[in-house]
Length: 105
Image 1: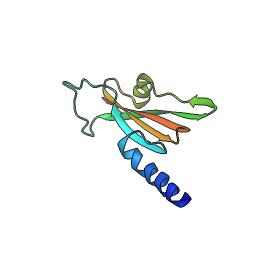
Image 2: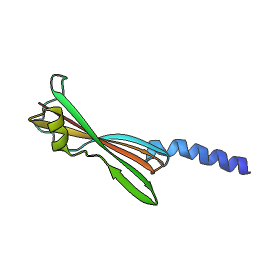
Image 3: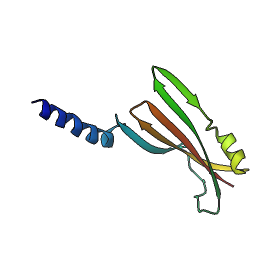
């Protein structure tokens, strides 16, 4: 009986991340702007930059780094920002890394 319960728990751990935000591992990319009317498509001729923040949460939450769009654009030499995406990676809810990808000229 204990083995059957263990198999069910292991099975749910692999099934749930596909349906909802995963309990063990999550890796998603979402746009930061939903109004993309008249937004140019990234063709490779444009420049891109990225910045990320990292979080460790275990009784205490520790955050470091910056993912501000203005800071990323300045570091990448962008003078005009067309759009940005947010990539989130989370492992067990303890380690979270959020990376902002900025596209422009």
